[in-house]
Image (cartoon, rainbow, N blue to C red; front, side, top):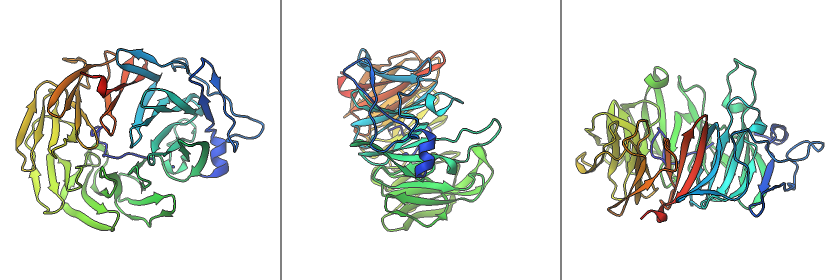
Length: 413
């Protein structure tokens, strides 16, 4: 998972029956043994009876089905104007979002693919995320007249499964965070004011609580909540709370710990929380102690390694690992300003996010060994290690399109 771009360790996002049918999230299955598309009839129609499911229309810059395209160790899954990926928590599958900005729903795709790059199904949808190892949630955004603002509560959502082509409508907004173990937290109201949040499961919906849900710990137990104080957008200021959702107890609730929205990241043990208050700081949830990390020109990316050290990068592309006391324990010069990690920190990846790049490689750290994987294209600003560290996905830019590739980390010497 990418421990950066102001994302938490877990990610996520959820409508009602007939409305969702109208949104047209039609399930398709691709035959990977032939060059054609095979349409599977769902057991419950997802369109009106007089409009049977049909293959999703492709925009001119989107790839059709067929044999995976490979380049060295990389497999090309698909491309579109805007692309992103979300790995399943067991790393055996991933969702690939292929979007065409300001286009109708039938020009949007979410692909369900295996970790080897084989496309299993294609959905007409705007976005998606994993609910657990078997289930995922897909979203269709309302198409609005020019000038109108999308309201997340109007999103149409449906739960899909690896074991079935059926979709089950669900009412969760797309801007949510999943613990990838069956719980989804979402915020209510404007981010420029005091908010509330709720936590959804397939059997319950919690009462609203104060704060905005920001993300979960890697084990899905702890929820980070941000409480608004003042300002809006990049200048917003608030304070952080960490809630053990299994008990409902607040492990950290200190209004003096000020930070902007986004960017907080819990370690694997659920004991330490890194956040930004003009500089990086780490709060110990057991002692309440806050340690300042002295690292100039730091980037927005951060990760925890397998030893529990905080890994930061700076804008020059240098990286360093810090102990719980804030001391530098290791440095890696000129590896990149981006960092991504396996969920247990056993694999760390560095890359340069911007052009011009000193190198066009992903530098991988595995059990104290360093290896280099050449990117499949010249401009790949997004890199995402799988949760087990055994796979890697990249999004590359070429012309007006974004291309999604994956590769096995095991293929890197």
